Amino acid sequence: MVEQHYTILDKAGNQLRVNLKRDKRLKKTSRWERLPDGSIYLRVPYRLPRRRIGPLLEQIAGQLDKITASHTRRNDISLQKRAEVINQKYFKGSIQFNAIRWVSNMRTRLGSCTRGGRTDGEIRLNDKIRSWPDWVVDYVIAHELMHRKHPNHSADFWKDLIATYPLTERARGFIEGAGFAAGRPNEEESGY
Image (cartoon, rainbow, N blue to C red; front, side, top):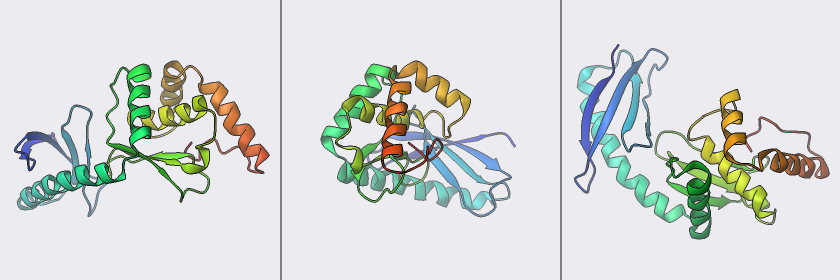
């Protein structure tokens, strides 16, 4: 089915475009994410009745304000500034993200980036890497920012990351060495 377009208002009265697509893979739940241009991309179950779209759009509009408030609370100011500099320097400011913070509950991952839903665009970094060299931490930030463009570790993801962040291979070598020193095997796809 062709995409449908709607407009919702946030609490400040700003209009936001919603691109709705019916997805045969979804059975019960809807998924949405904020796109870099500020619009909302909403996927709904293929057979979702039209009468349920209005309330769903109202629910999303309400969540937008909660997201903004939660991003403000969860933000680590110096880390946010660092990510903004990396975004400008390596991505020309084209990557849209909402918050970045240090967390202490990650066991093996070095970072994560959410796509869609209430926490869309939140980047979390493992606080165990705080003492690592800046260029390695910058790589992890660039890696997570790249996930806003490519959701997985596809060939395009690696090609774009290597082309964008010049110390990618060196940083990956550092991470692999740190893992080896800690007794962990190479965790290529574990989310760093």
